[in-house]
Image 1 (spheres, rainbow, N blue to C red):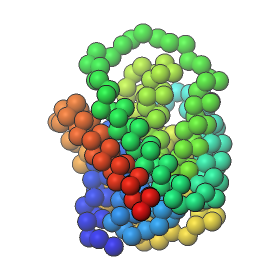
Image 2: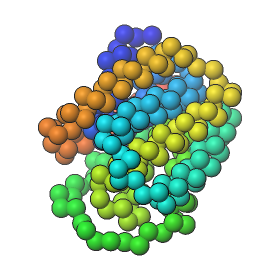
Image 3: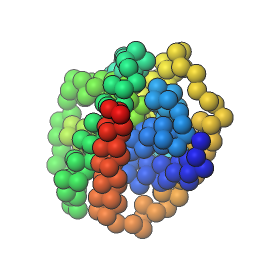
Image 4: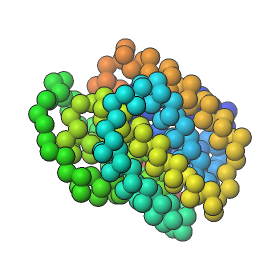
Length: 248
């Protein structure tokens, strides 16, 4: 295990607080390459780390003040179903395939972030919320959460906006709560088949949670445009590296 694991775990918390997402995408490679942990165990551990850090961020942002229960229940139930199914798939499939799928997700998300243009003027246009479509999206994100060990924030936030939740604070608050729910459900399913190092997991959780607090402070001071482009480039490089290593 590399000593770099701890400062990088701290950085994971900062990333989650700054972007409202990205915890699982950085935690899994972190545990694999700096913790010398097998892919499946890294996925299982990542779920608990992401859940804990998202809880820290949600408390810091007082997410409960803006939650819409119908929306939360729709995504929550569908996410639970998807997470259970995805975790079952993740346990059974080969580690190489799991690693390749994770690398592909990193590459796709990084390209989307690089091409995405920030919208400085949030719209007040209301869109009728489609709960059936929301359930389908929630299930899909839950499946990815279970298979790859990611909380799904980078998918949840744009999905919620696409479905009509236009106010960013409300979107991020729901995303954090749903990340917690999906990650805990998938993590519990993995716990039935894969044993993880509890002490190491707790250490990463503490380091990342401290990072989340610092990230919440930095969020008010650093321009989001520069952060987004830099993080996207890092994800792209990480995705390419993981994909290459999967075939070695």
